[in-house]
Amino acid sequence: MKVGFVGLGKLGLPTALAIESKGHTVMGCDPAPGVGRILRTRKLAYREAGAQELLRKSRLRLVPLARVARDSDIIFVTIQTPHRPAFEGSTRLPAERRDFDYRPLQSGLKTLSAEVEKLGRDRIVVVVSTVLPGTTRRELLPVLGPHCRLCYNPFFIAMGTAIKDFLDPEFVLCGVSDERAADTAQRFYRSIHRAPFYRTSIDNAELIKVVYNTFISTKIAFANTVLELCHKLPGADADVVLDALALCRDRIISAKYLRGGMGDGGACHPRDNIALSHLARELDLSFDWFEAVMRQREKGTEWLADLVELHRKGRDVVILGKSFKAESTILTGSPALLLASILEERGLKPLLWDPYVDAPSPPPSGRPFCYVIGTRHPDFRSFAFERGSVVLDPWRYVAGRKGVEVVGIGRG
Ligand SMILES: NC(=O)c1ccc[n+]([C@@H]2O[C@H](COP(=O)([O-])OP(=O)(O)OC[C@H]3O[C@@H](n4cnc5c(N)ncnc54)[C@H](O)[C@@H]3O)[C@@H](O)[C@H]2O)c1
Image (cartoon, rainbow, N blue to C red; front, side, top):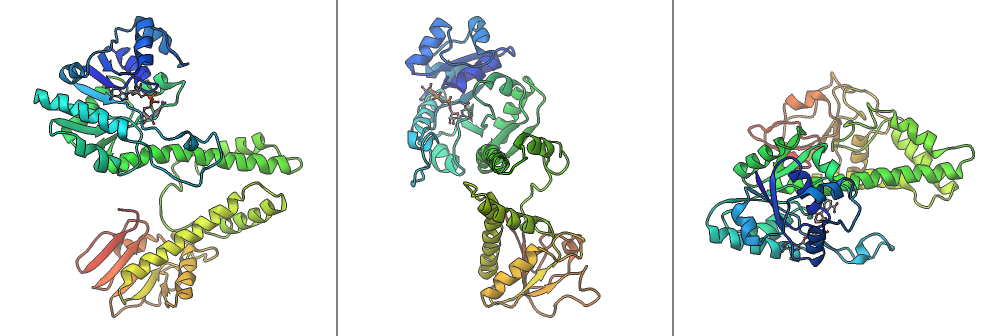
């Protein structure tokens, strides 16, 4: 394929070289003098594994934007989305919070679009730059003409290993606004590797890109909490402790527990976190991670209570499920009971019913309710909800049905 790049910076140039190494013809444009110098001298100004060798034998040249638009089957846009140095994390966390600056990306897309519209032919424009969710819809699609068929395809690459990461990724993420453009992008990636091609909406893709990164930050923050604990606990060794967790490929280093729903529960987890929060105070830990985890659980449950208040519209509340997990009778540490107690604080009198705990006595009936699925018992999928009811489903597993409004929590 003929592949164009708009932006040949630290992301664009190594990936352009990687694509060329797979036999594609690559061209690009970038006004930065530094990029021109790299391509003229064939000397990279930064360290990127494997890039220097590829650059030496590369035929990649800078061409005018009009040519990128005219000659490329697919055009990757890897323009910067910068922020001020205060937001880089090299200094203390600022009080202010800011979005990225989308002006360079918007302006680059606008000029690219003008060239594409001059041609009057469809072009596949693949935006790679990192943006916050909602940006493409709000800031990027409006500057593109009808011949720009857009995909949002952020790369999951790390600086220093960009080429390897691009050629051998965990997956390719494709936010789709145009199915045919996504088909072409998928065909292109099939020429590079066999990694899964994950198609989703642009809004989802924007979010996946940034939460991927914050997941890594979360792991590091957790590991560093363990590090400090171990430093302050005589006889403990952070590497030994974390190596043990790394062995747990079923429950911990896996997709398990990676589903939104009710909070964590049971006879061990909440109480362990609370005990560890005590230890954090005893040891004067610099940050009480365990309290933060429990606060999220409590705040998240308060938010569910807000949703109940929003949706109940005068109906009595029924929490379906009392036990802390599916198909269990154990009530200790149950997030469903926490929700009930928060609703009671607010003056509501939720009714609770759990087939594993209360049957054979029947569930509340005879009028419309505001149901909340407090425990993911399989039984509730086919539960006979009263007509005129609303069902708040944190698990998104109850199918919609006539006469009942089902609100799948977590679907915007
Ligand atoms: N560097 C990485 O490893 C990495 C990884 C994942 C995502 N990202 C994201 O990718 C985007 C680019 O990152 P980067 O590190 O390559 O930035 P960069 O600043 O190194 O490169 C951006 C390049 O785009 C060029 N450019 C700007 N406007 C242009 C235009 N109108 N036409 C052509 N070229 C133009 C700039 O001159 C610059 O060379 C950012 O959104 C970043 O967050 C970067």
